[in-house]
Structure formats: C-alpha cells, structure tokens
Image (tube, rainbow, N blue to C red; front, top):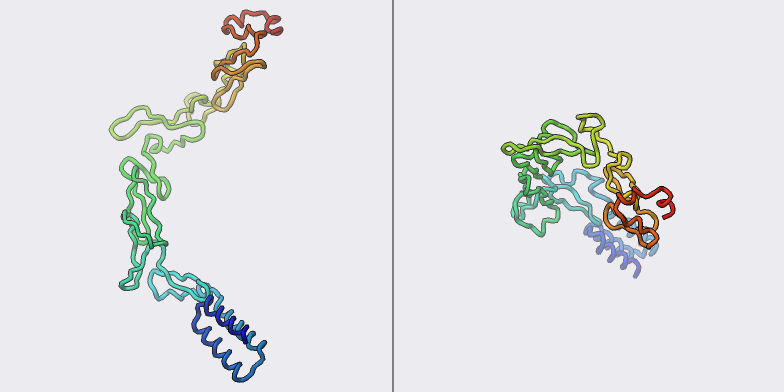
Length: 269
C-alpha cells in the first residue's frame, strides 16, 4: 500500500481539490479493511485524481457569472474568479470596481492592471469605464488609439505627404501652420506643380554633381549620389579623391588643370 499512500499525497499537493482527496482516502481505507487487490485500488485512485485536471472555465463558462465584472481563470485542479482588465478588487466588499488608469498612483500588487501610455506632450488621459483613452490637446488630431498628430495645412486638406515628399511649413498664422507637400531633396515633381508625385534626380546624367571628374566617377543613388574614387586614389572628402602614388601627380591638380590635359596624357596616367 506504500504506492497508494504516495499517490494520495501527490493528489493532495497538486490537485488542490479537497473533495477528491477525501474520496481517495476513503477508498484506500476501504481497500485495507476489505482486502481489495492493490492494482484495483491504484486504478481507482488514478481515475479520481484525473478528475481534478480538467479546465473548469472551458467546461463551465458561467462559473464566475454570478460575480459582476469577474472572469474565470483555470488553475491546477481548480479555478478562481478575478476582476476583468481595467478593474480591481475591493477587499472590503469583494466586488470589482473601475480602476482609474489616469491617476499617477502606483499599485504594485495590481498585476492585472494596464497603466495608461498617453503622451503628456500632445494628449491627456481620460478615464472611462473599464479602460481609458488619450484625448489630444488643442492643435492636435487623433492618430490611432493612443497617438496624436499636430494639425497642419496638409492634414486638414488631406494631402498624403508620404514617400518622396513631405509637409513643409510655408508660414505660420496664429497657432495654425500653413503647409504644403513638397518633394524631398534629391527629387523633383514628375509633372510641373505635382508635388505629390516626385521622382529621383539623376545628378550624374544631368552633370549637376560635385564629383571631381579627374579622380572619381559619379554614381547615382535614390535621392542622392556618391563619388567613387578611381583606382590608385583615396577619398579626401565627400566629393574629392587624392592620388596615393607619385605617378598620378596630375590627379592632384585642380579640375581645370585636369581638363586641359590631352586624352593621351590622361590615359597614360
């Protein structure tokens, strides 16, 4: 019967179901008195302990229905009712009441409480039943549940300044900024006046780059370009390269000097 006693102890420690444990004890005692086979007793004990391993909350959804504002939480061999998110337990009357997330107080034991995440720079927290909301201050409009965006001429007109353009302030009258969508640096309108559709400027093709043609080659990129140094040269700054050996002395001269060299001289160098 040593095995049976161990099973009973485990059942009491993990199941936390007093009724099941009592029944198990009764079965064990009865088996000793009636001299029932040990294998039969073990089978009965295992069956009884398995009864406490189900999910009561799923099997009986209305377990916590009698408690207002509480939800069922399953636990090993049992369950308990806890307050819904946004509510906390009143230890005096055992009822759940709304928790004001907007208050600055800190409650270390309220593990189920979600504090507010409103930005104090552009919004104010307002408590509502079971939750909270962020109300934008004057001059800002709602952007999602908890974010606010500054009101501008672009946001009022509904112009989608995205991608290769942005909302630029032209002037300010009172608290309202007068703005319009313009192409970002390195881009220009696909059609004159159409700042909502911008295309990349190929500075290399248009010869508007600042690369030193004697020491580097212009390479276009989205919205910009870069100067790739010729072989035997090292970068000096963003647009210039310098020869690393004496044989390329001509590349250390000014651009004007370089351009006056003959093709044969440049090729040889």
